Structure formats: structure tokens, C-alpha cells
Amino acid sequence: MDETAVIEQLSNYKRIVARIKVLENYSIGAGITVSRLNQDDQLMELHRKLRGMPTYMYLSKREQELETTAHAYLDKYPSGIRSQLRAIPAQGCDADDDKALRELRAKIEKVIEARTGSKDGYEAVIERLSELQDLQAQRDQIDAALEALESYKPDYAKLLRLRYVEGVPVQEAAAEMKIAERTFRSWRTKALEEFERLAV
Image (cartoon, rainbow, N blue to C red; front, side, top):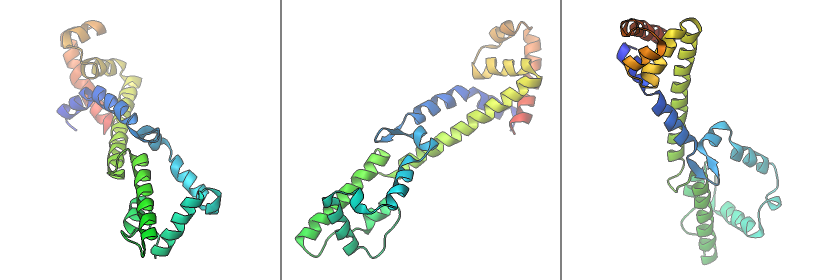
């Protein structure tokens, strides 16, 4: 990482934090946000519990009928919900089965939409979750490097925060630190070098 990259990384800190807030509050449906999904997967836990129970304990009579129809047409049971949707045939042997299969597909589509906020499926959610995790890692790296720098060179850490994270002009930052601009510029170079060593 060179000086320009360090400056860019520090200058983007506020944008990173703002984007994290936006992503954390992105709804994926059913009152679940990306940040909650990132913290724990409650839906999978519920699914694991339900798998161990007989279906009559949690499915309605109609849902049991749909399950029976699905079993009649499926020779294998894919694990992903989108795979399950693709595995359901478009037509059954008779009109009743056609109706049941359409209803089953519609229910699965609703589950996909409820889980992801759109019929596009998980791709959009995974993309946002991945972006959130990447940005959190960047933020944490900057925070850790600044905290480490502060532990042995507090003036350097303050200088970097003022100038690049907060965007304070050189004159104002030097005045706030009660140092001459010339000293500020000298420290700036050293502070960037120290940060670069720590942030690698």
C-alpha cells in the first residue's frame, strides 16, 4: 500500500461507515434485515427443528396434500429452495395435480420473495451481505490501525483522523492540534508511513 492508497482508505472511512448503515438496514423480507442475517440464521435453525418433527404437526391439511402431490412427482429432493422450485414439474397427470403443482410453485415463490425481498432470489441478498462483510472488514482494519497508532503515537493518529477521516483542512487541523503547519506536514508523512505499516 502506498501513500495514495492510505489517504484514499482513510478518506473513504465515512463513506464506508455510511454504506454499512444502509446495508445493515436493507430489508430482505419478513422483517429481517441483512445485519440480522449476518448475525445469525434463525430461519435455518427453525428449519432444522421442523425437520425432526412429523409434518402433520406443523402443516395444514392442504399443505399436507400438496406435500403428498410433490412426493408423487419428485424422485429426488434438492436442498435449496430455488432448486426445489425448479424440480417441480410444470404439469401433472390430471387437472387436480396441475392445480396442486401450480399452488406448490406459488407457495415456494412466496417463500423466496419473503426471504429475499424479491423474486430474484438470494443473489441480491448474498451480494449485499458480502458487501456488508467486506466493508465491515475495511472499517475494522482502519479502526484497528488507528487505535494501534494511537497507543504509541497519539498525535499521528489524531492528525490522520482530523485530516483524512474528518476532512479538516491542513490549517484548521494544525490549529486544532496546536502545532505549526510545517510540523503538521512533517508529521503527516510520518503518520501515513506508520499507518501503512500497521494496516498491512
